[in-house]
Image: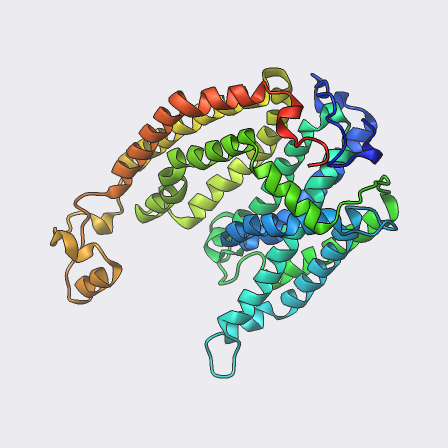
Length: 414
């Protein structure tokens, strides 16, 4: 299959033969393209890490933007660079502007004549919207940048790049922005400021975006493609893909698979903070975890060549279930802070809602948890995850993995 002649309406190609070797054994061209993909995904993760709560919006935009990004482009710049170049320039300019004003905006927010929360909302909306569009273009480019047998490394590049960008902007930035963290681990003389501020961070990455975009425009040429599908044609193709039985099955699998880890992912860190673990200590553990996240992202792609991707995914699924139980055990044995020992038990409902809890404390009372729903819900989620994994998820994903490529494609011309 010639990559420059690829189209959604081409005849069904043969399934590419997977190459069972590591990254350093890939062709030099694929190694360079892999590095480019990691860089593009990394840049995409920078603003997304700062706007972590907007990930659902990013996913929602994929549905509506994908056909437009896929069908509208300039032959002069290339199918993917037509979107990546202007989007990264706009993102860089947006971060430069925001970086020069964000400190003043935060200081004046809520004061008379100062900015409102809508100003922040607009700029994060803009950055997330740019990231959503860029992600679509980079995902599409990844399929043609790498050789057909090495396409699985595209997901590895995405994992490594997005993980690095998100951790750098979310956890690493918050740690170095914290005065307590800086005073505890880096300073002999305490200070009220962290090692870096949001304005300087945004300014740095704004310039980084622009420099990388200029380099991409000058140094990387995109292969010519031919695609006559209009926007409406791509929407119809997308709807046809969503109606494929195998696609519907994998959507259900991913929808159900998340349930087993929900309580652990959402609450465990909060429970540790509630027990007095400390934000600076939690930030340090995440910093230690950061290189392991990057390394495992690479090895996941390598091992998937040897053990097949979904079999490896199943092993990781079971590991996450055990990790959820171990995390609950850690929370259970973690000693509570001394200030909470020996408190009196109040009426069960008086502390069920935050306003009631505040009234209780304001009246001189104290609140103690009689039954913590975290333990019950986490066990329930793990049981649900184990049952669904055994009875539905594992058989389905292994069955889907063995399907030929034609099972995931529409018939030509439809």
